[in-house]
Image (cartoon, rainbow, N blue to C red; front, side, top):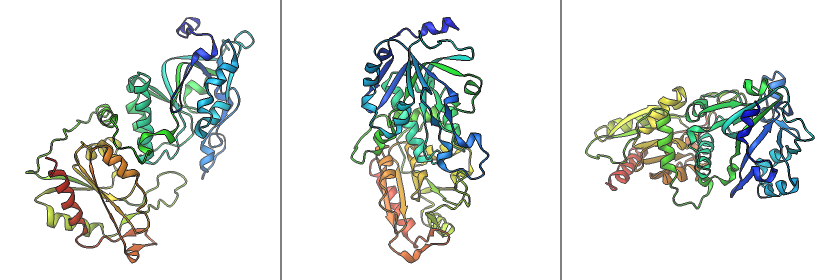
Length: 396
């Protein structure tokens, strides 16, 4: 065990902390004491947990650094990130301990070499926010000079498994979960050679409404597709051949334990009519695939998106998938009469190099409050897709 600790060469506390602009924090030789983190959902049988039950309450010393020097200087290094609510609890749980006064090698201690990144997820079952988290981690890895596939991810939350979990297990070297993984359940303390707190989500570039361009998006897209073994298409399209349109079907399904009835908002009530109209009017120009993505394994979802030229559907989290389309495509986003103030999906698609086309229902009577679905008038699907075709082909 002692030999592995030679990897940690710095002994002064402040020299083992690096704070980067925007709230990224890098630690060398930081210890996690798992018994000082408790999540109610892991301790009490809860059929219907509240969201807060799935978050860990961290006591002082959960993060501990055994180091020398002026502790005040180490605390000063963290001043830049104290303002971020997302990291406030983690900073409060961080303790500096003098290795002379505190046993450095408890009997039940493990050491983890390599690069680790810790994250507490919110909206963990939502594909858009998951993509935001993954992009943030990809950017963080670039900033600190680490290949993202070499990162080990620590989930400091107690969320249940979802169909989006393969993102975490496929993209990165390793995934470990606090309170579940044997690394934490069988150790009183776990020392990490290098541990990163990624910048708070509020600083994600995709959440900047005024951002006009963002270079990491295409490398991120290629990274994700490569890790899943999916070919990355060229942005060159041939408008003399049929373009691929992926029609997203939003239907009721249970995303997490707090969505017990599985009711999903913003559905198309006349799906069959919409698809029939597309096939009748545009079959010579488009190859139409209609899919409820959540019914497919994650890799298949990505394959469908990566092969699409046009992404068509009601506004929803799945529009975040447009980031994985080859640039130069078109995204059609339909809003019901009371939901057209969301700009997030347009930001994703335009920064990904796509034309973004929206249509909003102005007829309140077209919305069924019982089924939470909207009837799309005849002619609108054809009009929107013709516009999408034009947008794609005028660029060629």
